[in-house]
Length: 276
Image (tube, rainbow, N blue to C red; front, top):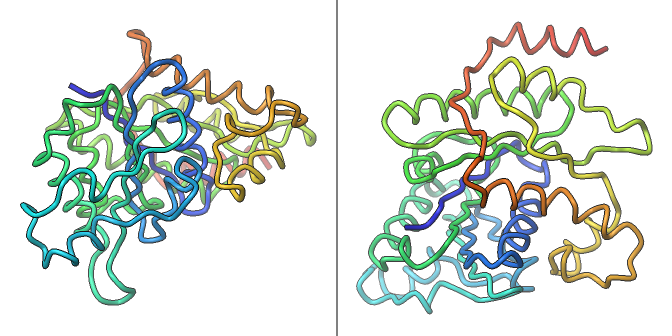
């Protein structure tokens, strides 16, 4: 049975880039990985496959939504380090719920028996939306991971995600593995003060700190994982370190997961006020 990860975070936080690099780190450590993008932009797997691949919703439209006519090869592309990628996609704007499409992708995984064919399945889920179908990956996940930056909006979204994880944990096995501090600007002191306080209050930890570095942005636009970038690129080793740390932690049998205890909105403001 696969180890299932569900990666969430505020929209625009760098979640897909982080997810792709975690998948790459896991694959290079010997794991067979399937990454599933759950966003209408369908760009989660772009750094892995180097292209915008056909989505589940597009494949279903081609067969008039007859699931039985699809095969895994119709919706899965293989890319860097043998990682398989799948994109749920989404309906045209204003015409339906994207969460429905995520639910369809989850259903296809079950129909194809893919939960038994991978060491790790990673869901990269749209923004901080945790209603309906967008929360479906939490029903199957062993661990949730939250991507965040050291600011109010990101922490507010992270707290909402903690609420969803806490609620789901009452019926399912999911726990929070931790928070990945993204875009940590070491040139300006590398502060994660607010995230540190938040993590302590909700009963979790910072899994790792990903630096704010131009090479990470460049790799994204190049359609590559950071691991596929030229070894001569300045800062590459520094940038790879956090992704390798996360992969090692997830693959170990000693992952320090927990059921988070979300805090009130006033407490979030107190964290921000105390930091300022």
